[in-house]
Amino acid sequence: MKALPIGRRRLLQAGLAAALPLPALAQPRRFEPQAGPWRSFEVTTTVEVAEPQGTTLLWLPVPDLATPWQQTLDNAWSGNAARVRLAADPVRGVRMLVVEFAPDVQAPVVALSSRVRTRNRAVDWQRPQPAAEDPAVLRACLSATELQPVDGIVRQTALAATRGAKTDVDKARALYDWVIAHAHREPTTRGCGTGDIRVMLETGNLGGKCADLNALFVGLCRSVGVPARDVYGLRVAPSAFGYRELGANPAALKGAQHCRAEVYLAAHGWVAMDPADVLKVMRQETGEWIKDPAHALAAPVYRGLFGSWEGNWVGWNTAYDIRLPGSVAKGTLPFLMYPNGENETGRFDELSPDTFKYTISARELAA
Image 1: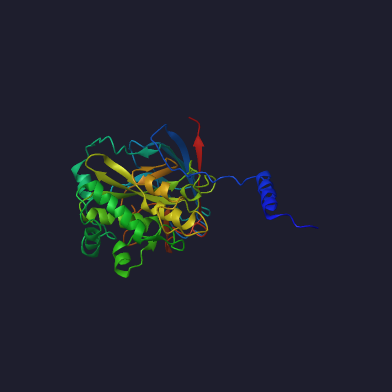
Image 2 (image 1 turned 90 degrees about the vertical axis):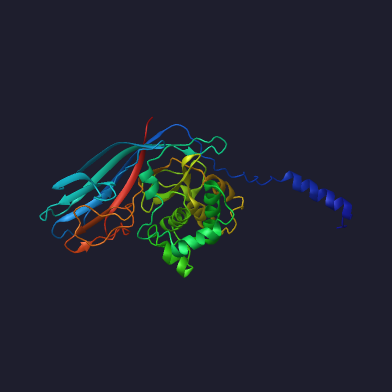
């Protein structure tokens, strides 16, 4: 067969290529939560104690926030407990459901259902809207906690990261960027981490999950005079923007606990932040570990989570160093984001829902 002239061959190849279906063009990713309508969810936590020994006590977090972006509707419970009550940490005041089972109950079980309304939140940087806050709350949000000191290496790090920053917004932005540039999501961390930021900085190991990464951001902010706090909660639905790692399967919320962060800015009041979720998307959204927040996949999340977040998440509380009412165990919890329990054998492992048997699910309620 006679070879075609080169020019003719190229023309045929071009025609063949034109006839083949073109691959779908990748759509630009979006992550732009905007304040909008309320969504209502019912979140149900069911605990079954597998091997009761003596009196069993449980402490279950309930939605304990009343904000422009979340409202609790009610809490209800059922089961075979001898005593159930809403109680509060004696110092921090955070509410929780306290459940007590008598020693003769062979199969302790309790189900807690909380109904709550949530919605997206987003700050309008172009329209300052100062919001008054209790000075005592702001003082608390500048103070150290057991695992979040505001002096020593924490303050030294924050001062270096914010050098040249003049306003509280500039400082928050500098620290948000510093955490994203220097820390990373570590998938092997148990639960959500503990938030021991002094150890993180002293060892140089800045890997962890949300309770580590957002605690680092919060502690750095506090150390340079920007009030900040962690908000502990639970993802309850998929992300509306298609990011797998920013949502959850409502039928089975095992491992869906997530804490976010807020900073108080003079011109805007409390503003949403979440550098931990930026790092989660960079590490886990695809098989590629993205190292640059300007990457096309990460950039919308990097922009969006400085000032906004989605309402597919329920916040429990903002409390640290928790003392569980009635507990005989010594010490405090760094935060209350998981079910907790104890009996004569000691404190249960709240990070192991397969051995300390509990399940969490959610369903969205009709408007």
